[in-house]
Length: 120
Image (cartoon, rainbow, N blue to C red; front, side, top):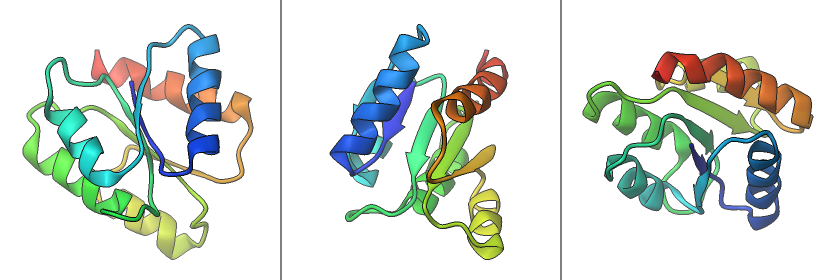
């Protein structure tokens, strides 16, 4: 699973929660590194993706992943952008689910577990 978050503390916490749940993770801190990681073999089985990043926003990353990768992995967007328009933009970009910040560890795990079977 690939975690994409430019805030080091948030990235570390998400990675910790998922690893403690027995999931294998890799993480990067920006949109361009996310695209590089998504294209490498082996491809991630899922992407947990922030929206607001300095180099390339998560919506653009999501669009590119979904458009360019055959059998693209599920994408869970996690974002502080919480309006209906923000959430709609996430789904329009191709995300499989949209989780608003702040969120609990339990909610993150529930969403991840629901999406993981889609990548199998």
